[in-house]
Length: 246
Image (tube, rainbow, N blue to C red; front, top):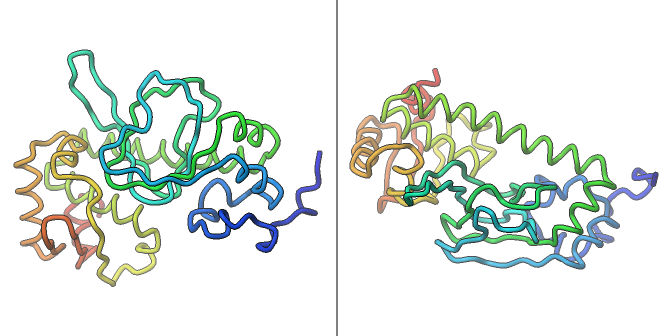
């Protein structure tokens, strides 16, 4: 077994593509050595995808995995009659794909413009087998997504429409600005990565209900809205209370 401590990451030894990657330290690549990153970078590529692009369809063979570098990916399940449900969202620096699985169980499409760093399945699975720390980082991401899914089951099953929309805004803020939890008293501003219809789909509400609840949250003073997509959380404590979290 190789001595990984002896090959600690030195930025000068890291490939240029990886040095410029803002998601590297927070994502799965943060546990890789410079040598590992060189191996991965030789077969990886970064690409921008327009909103609405299908990245993978349910049942497709997993030929590539990816790190989300920018934007939001929506995961959906489709019934035989064509009805769809958004079952998850992925943000930077999430790992896109089910590692060690041959096919995808969900459809993955871009909810906004998305930048991915893609790499072949064989390369990443070999690294997973060779690097225990990489296994641990992936396992940690999966557990975090599981905890979030359980929280969302509670949101969808028990919360009111107003609480659902408030919870959704807190979810988006947390992922788009991970430092927001360190600035409780400071307003935070972000662009909604989903359309109102996608939000309605994700929350199990009608489009009209989502719009009505957004207006009520604005009137409460918890948020402000500019051009329907730019949200500023002005009173996070109030928004948490309206989400039923306090």
